[in-house]
Image (cartoon, rainbow, N blue to C red; front, side, top):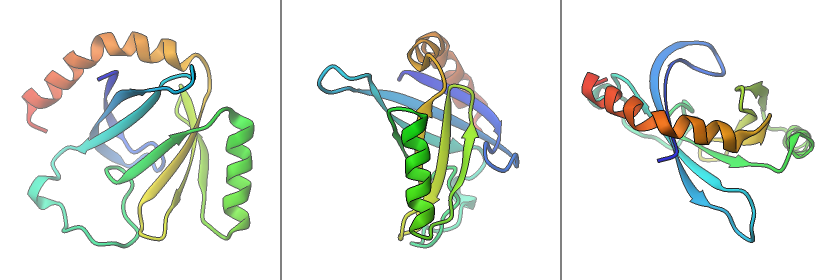
Length: 142
């Protein structure tokens, strides 16, 4: 685990929702920077969550993020998606990265993200606190 974040608001809508966002380094290739896979756990959903259906989904716990080289690539993808008639949210500045969001035909929320600054340094600094954040989340039973 590279990073764990305990967050209390939806990053797109600002809706009050408590969630854990966990990142794992899955490595790079050909000397490139690391890639990450990230997961969400939304507090209090458990058995109260509706059964899964292939339709447009709420993106907090069902989305896949892909990193891009830079903000130019993010702009190119945004235009490409809009030109294809897709709804695109963003770019949204998350501090470390900026992201655009859209849905695939199965309803999954997809994200393209570009670094805003020294992301590796941010992840390195946060990784030292991540296990404590995750432990606190589990102990509270959210």
